Structure formats: C-alpha cells, structure tokens
Length: 134
Image (cartoon, rainbow, N blue to C red; front, side):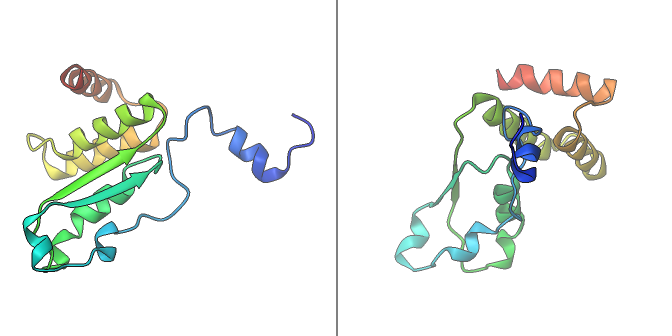
C-alpha cells in the first residue's frame, strides 16, 4: 500500500468493519425540544452509522437529568453492516442483563467492547446471549 498517507494507513489497519466511532459520545436528547403536544408521542432519534452504541447509552443514561422529557424514547440505529448491528444488540443485551451485578456487567461490557480476545467465561456468556439474539 505504497503512497498512503499516515491517516489513511491507520484507517486501513482498523479492519473491514468500523467497530468504534471517532467522535465523543453525544447526548442526543439535549437537542430535543419539549412541548406539551409532543409529550404524548415517543421521541424518535435516528443515529446514522455510529459504529458503536455510545450515543444511545449516553442519551439513555442522562435521561433523568432532563426532567422535561417524560415521553417514551425510540432509537433508530442505521448501520450498513449486519455484524455491527449484531454487536450493538449484544452490547445492549449485556447492559440490560439485570441478573448480573452492576460491576460484573460493566466489566463484561468493557471486555466485549474493547478487546479482540475475551476470557473463556465471557466467551460462554456471549455464546448464551447470541443464542437468545438469534
């Protein structure tokens, strides 16, 4: 790959599918306008090609800060690659697994999110969650 600049060269090394985004997580709800008429309808948010679920998780986690938003939330995540969508669903399933203590859930989430290799027990956990997703 002669002739590639440094930034292009580093992007090529990231693999076929983009699994991490390049921007900081953004609370999408900070841009929502709250009105009396809109309170009965769900607030719909489209996130296009985020590469991971950082925006969705941050928005949900900060929802209580904005008391004016009492309406239901619906997130639509647009991705072109099915493997990335499957990863989003797996990570959301880990976050919402109330059978695990919070600390263990966070550890497993970070292990799956940031590592190319996982421990054997995490591999068994992913296999079990994968069966549920299918």
